[in-house]
Length: 337
Image (cartoon, rainbow, N blue to C red; front, side, top):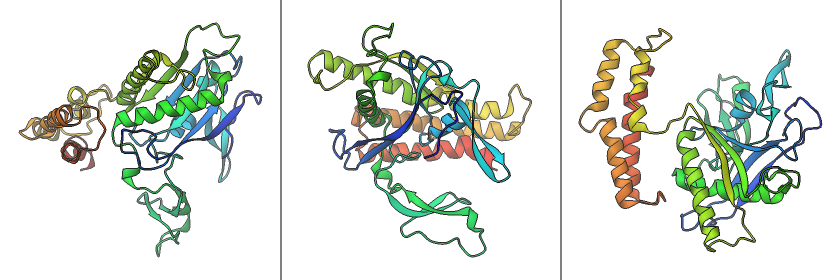
């Protein structure tokens, strides 16, 4: 793993994995290994007393290395010579006043993995062909076909609900803060903050769902500790000092229709969709068994048959899949035409 160039060379960085064995998330049916990748960078000054900010990208499925190198991180990837790339310090990176940790989650996102599998990545269609690695198809440039080590790409070896992702994140932070107590905002001797661990959780896009549910899970775990149902000598209380959501997807029933409205009526004067196409798509969205109704049907099914969002009820998963396909075709399909 290369380094991220920071403003001061004294800023420590740590990258690594927090690993969970199968069945650690019980009662969730987690029969796979979880290896969650993180990249931590110290604040520019006073790292021992600086706050801690956790940054996760959205998706679901977007690596937080996007946040690190393209958005809020201490450095950016630049071309330092013809055909040669490196990093340079970003003046307004969030390490300016906080320790920052970027986490690839859920499992198999970014550098996180269930098991290592050799394979090939076709950059032209983004498909991964797993073991054995191979050469580029005939007529395709070699530089568009990369051999490497990947996750299994088995969809059942990752969280299939946000609630399950929250469980994994709690374990990940338990391990990180337990291993690096000097970055625990509540545990440093020269810290002015009192009380339990206080962290800032920032996320974007699908983070509109990640953030609130992660916060709720942390608070539920805190309540279990206080009630004596979790061992206090082997767990940490994790309390959020703040929750930040950027361009968040929070509620599909409220926000979804605006994909279509904004495509034709926006402050940039861009007509991504004609008025006719926008109105036709909006009609489809509101139609019987359209996207809106299918979202509501999905929520109804979850509340009745899978209230804990454990993602193991086949009938509920199928309703969700149908809604996802319908909404994708209605909301994003018009952009592709």
